[in-house]
Image (cartoon, rainbow, N blue to C red; front, side, top):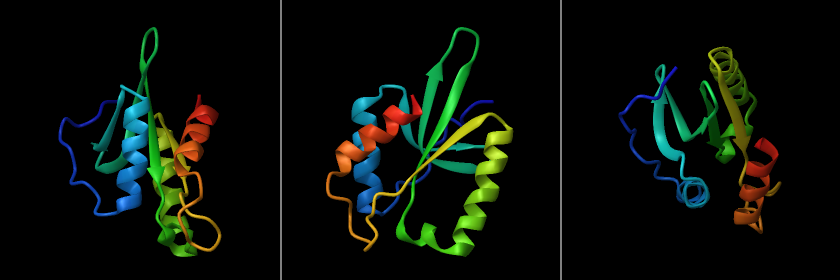
Amino acid sequence: LSLSPLLGPRSPSAIEAHCADVILSLLSDASRNRYIMGFELDVAIEVAGVRTTALIDFEIDEIYHRSQRQQGIDARRDKFLQLVGVKVVRFDPFDEAGREIADLDQSIKEKLHEVG
């Protein structure tokens, strides 16, 4: 299982770009908008092991990901990626009112720490 060498277009979302930039500044093995098996990964994190490389898909969810319809789409996508060995991590950068969370950078760091 490997990432396509092609990069997808960057999202026009300012918050997704900011979140991705924070992750890229913290992890040298991360890259933005990469594809695997036809799916775009917001931030792909390759974790080298002794015999294999694990792949983490860090998804930065916009507000529309809170809709029931989109959650169903995301669940099917995540399940497929997990079946082929990709760990999917979803991050919602918004508070309950739909505003950017207060300490976004720290929240990203905490989420990355949870993942390991």
